[in-house]
Image (cartoon, rainbow, N blue to C red; front, side, top):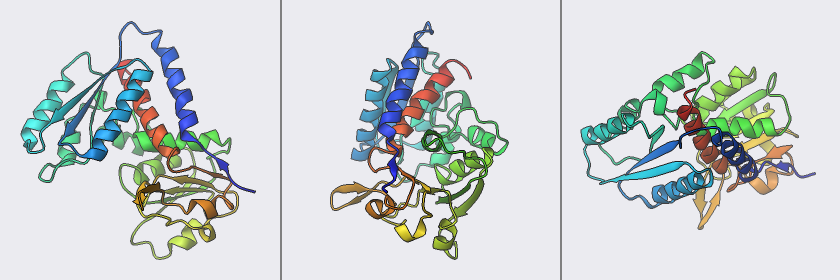
Length: 277
């Protein structure tokens, strides 16, 4: 029997509906500012999606397009100016940034109280002490998708393939905070297949197309595919979808799985920041 599809696009629609209901109780409009440096086509497309999402929930949004040759100090000054604005409740700096700009230094300057992406070191550090306030968007979306299965996270063995702060490390901490037993696999892991085969929950965020194959998956496992790889003009994930779906219990498609939930969590974070908690 094929796995049940975890369609992030459907769940994201519900999240937006909940946000609209909460918005009716507010006397102001939440505002999100996106800072784009340069004109990377993929970044421009992602930002358009975010703007459309804001329109759907009646948020104010604005895009600050800055030249690719901007220096780091000027970019940081722009971020700090947004920090000072009372009509802007969430700020994100679209990645990637041009060479020569230290992205960590820029993210550090986003106020933790306006950190819509949940990537400021203070917000990330709170994950270590199980104090989840504003959390990174993709990991939070992953947790929601796992919860949507109806399966308990507590007591499950979760394997995160990839250890980036953006996804792998953060989602592992969030799973640990929910009492899962968590294993991280990475480029120095001796036998990735052996580790993944033990998993009740697999989070694939390695950036390699079709990396996870059916022989690596325990029957009935929850498989979350974070990868977006472009192969022959098509977007494919880190999971070999057609064969893995015949083994897994639940699986996210690419596209339409994790991506829509990442954007929905950006809206949720912005609302949370707007109401001050």
